[in-house]
Amino acid sequence: MKFVQESGNHILIHGYETGKVSITGISAAHPAIKSGAISEWDPDNHLGIIHHSVTIHSTGEIRRWTPQNHAEFEPEHFLALTSRQPEIILLGTGQHLHFPPQDCLTVFQQQNLGYEIMDTAAACRTFNVLIGEGRDVVLAILMIN
Image (cartoon, rainbow, N blue to C red; front, side, top):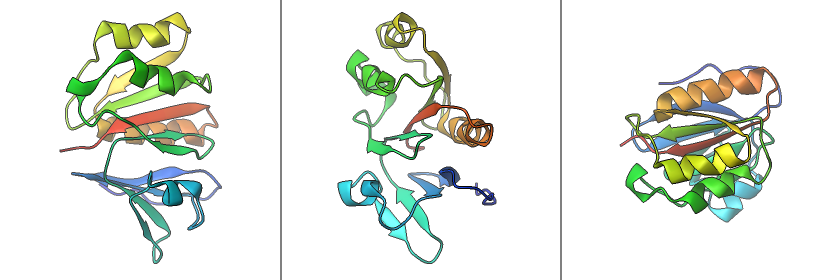
């Protein structure tokens, strides 16, 4: 699925498909390109292409995320999402909805952080809506397989 780019200076999910998420609202000099968090840069369309699990913060910070599938979820993966104390954390669990183990979710609950768990496609769409509302949000996604 692809989205139409909206005006503004926000990072947005441009599209998602099996094994790939594309983002807009970044430049070719974005630090995530150099760090490898963004797998490819499409200069013709000004898109960052990602082929692995990643976290994206509403401020534009993009980082690789260690788990590559829901079976790898550990509490420390979830603790890494809380460092900026976002208003809400969106967790995209791949092609299908998979609830993480309770000890992982307890990390969010102990810090009184809001979170939503959904498939990656829904998480990407929700991220764009919340960014459009000016919300402080972290998106953590597993790739759609």
